[in-house]
Image (cartoon, rainbow, N blue to C red; front, side, top):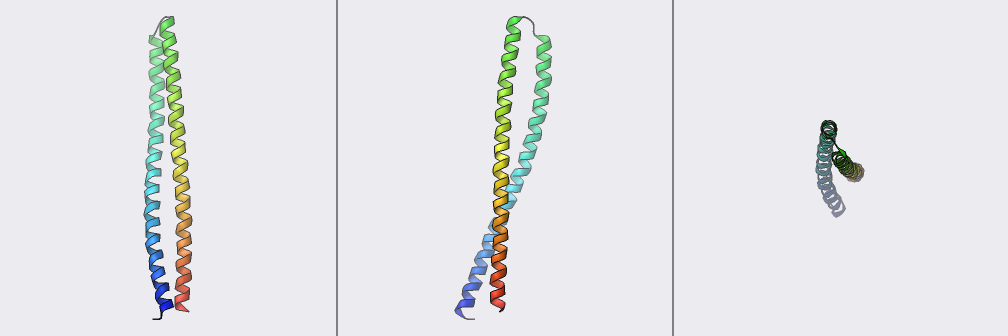
Length: 122
């Protein structure tokens, strides 16, 4: 084997290692996306339960002070829910971007490997 073929073979091995790393990264990102979906579902269930509790408290509270506190609690909860939802969406966007970049890199590595194999056989 001449030095050019040897360098190509080494480069091919390096690309294969990089491809394995990209595959592992992709698997990790997919796992995080799956967990993210479960968090969103849990968040939706929590919001439904909160609304039911708010309605129960609203019906049980009486007087001006109680109403004012009830509205304050609703405002705080709505603000927290918006923050949670924003954080969940931001994380989902980051994960989607990571998956997209990993897929692009994976395809690029496959193309490079195919080119090196072609050069080795010719």
